[in-house]
Amino acid sequence: MYSFNAMNTTFFTAGLEEKYSLQYKAWAHHVEKKVSRFRKDSELSQINQEKGEIFVPSALLFELLTESLHYYEETDHLFTPFLRQKMMEIGYNRSFEQLHTTVISESMAYANDRKKRNPSPTHLPLKINGGMKSICLATDADVDLGGIAKGWTAQKMKNWLLADGVASGLLDAGGDLAVWGKSPENGNWVIELANPFLPEEAIGSFTLHRDCGIATSSSLKRRWKNEDGEIAHHIIDPRIGWSTQTDYVQITLFTPNLTTSEVYAKCLFILGSKNGPQWIQKKLPDAAWIAILQDGSIEISPSLKTYCSNWEFHA
Image 1 (cartoon, helix red, strand yellow):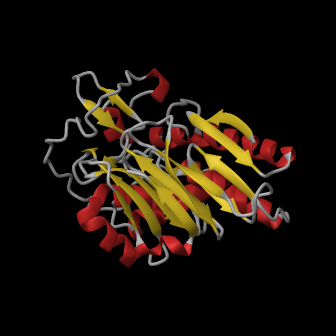
Image 2 (cartoon, rainbow, N blue to C red):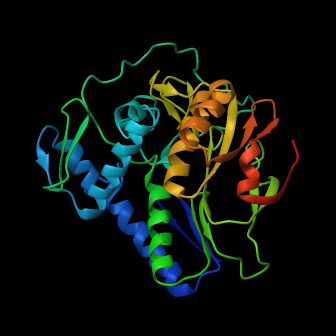
């Protein structure tokens, strides 16, 4: 296993030769330099500074912005790359390790009495010209790719390794996994699932029997106290412009593609157990998930058997 830090989190690899792990590290750092909203010299920061103007981004950023806009429209705006200003307003205005983070026993002791609604934009916040490979950000919009960049980074690396003939491997991007082939140790990959209430412990495990992307979203992992003394977390519901109010505390979503999993895990989390499963089954019939609710109960989709040969969880 090889690990490194990037994008304010830990990345690691398993089942790969060292040269591929080093390539993954270099790629992740390269992406971070391009898309970090905390770096004033990043290309993303430049776009946010040049609103309303035609901008020709690098091929990397053009592809990532194009995919982000695709998911924005496909998910009915539940996933949005236009939350930079909202993240700033709720206190996520600098790198996470610099925030006043907090540990609280109540799983949803957030400032979640907010009922205000944010109207959907009447115009597309980002226009993309596929012929010129250029973009134009609306003057009233801001871009933040934190909700998609990690998964996209790992998925791109997986695609390259597969094209290079690498038959198996595991790429971790802050807890999101791109997995393919067979584990060199024991055949099928056995993955432990984190306990959202006790981060140092596992709440169970599952054994994979197919290639997939696995993304986990949790409201208990990245929390902080803002300047008003309010507890907030990083999963924003764009309909209210604040930390999501839901009965889920953790979602682990399986699809064939990690970028898709990362995006839709957040959407399922936002919608909660009442509306989320029906919505995602309609949008992604091939998705499966493991959900942990505030009361500690575990919800498993019937489709989990599509990806896992066996699993064991304890509430």
